[in-house]
Amino acid sequence: MRSTRRTEWKIHWKKYKHLYKGNRMERRNKWRCKWDDKYILDSAQKVGG
Image (cartoon, rainbow, N blue to C red; front, side):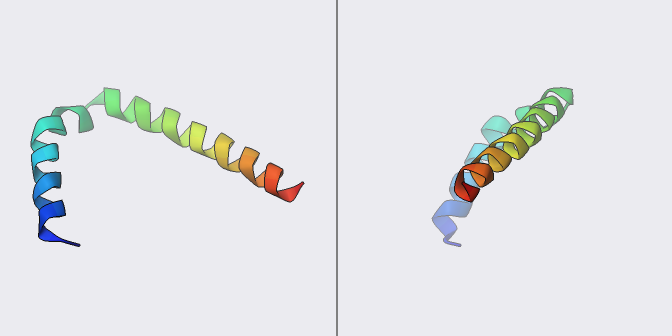
């Protein structure tokens, strides 16, 4: 991993840290997990035939 990437991430983390903690993010993660499962299943079915 390049150092520039790491510094970019640090800047991003400073800006968005408040979004990653609290119930809001948890809820979004749950939704994303659900959506990911559905999407993965759908794509797998498409690939399967």
